[in-house]
Length: 124
View 1 (tube, one colour):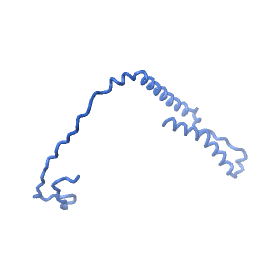
View 2 (tube, rainbow, N blue to C red; view 1 turned 45 degrees about the horizontal axis):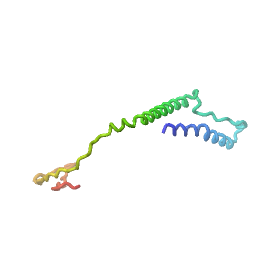
View 3 (tube, rainbow, N blue to C red; view 1 turned 45 degrees about the vertical axis):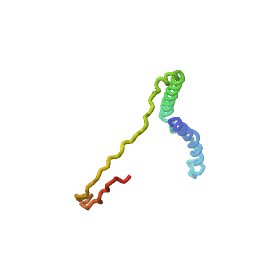
View 4 (tube, rainbow, N blue to C red; view 1 turned 180 degrees about the vertical axis):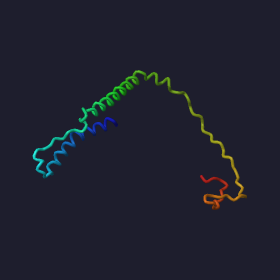
């Protein structure tokens, strides 16, 4: 996702925005606009620190992913020793205990009103 974001930033800053900036200057009618101004890429301001940081992030990520792939290729036999021989047993649910509720007392709900009577079996 970082590479896709970086690609979108570069496309916008070096392709789309310069074209749009030049196109918008044609619509301006001021006398000051006799000489066209050039688009200055936003990401190159500040010495291009954004591009250096993104290069470092993507470079380290690509290098570490490559190391993971190389380690996975050489240790395929080690993967088999981590696999378990566990086989799940058959699921046997326990029967539900039947409970009865005696309706001798009045239950109060929110606001002091009478609550509806509880059913003998819960509704599922």
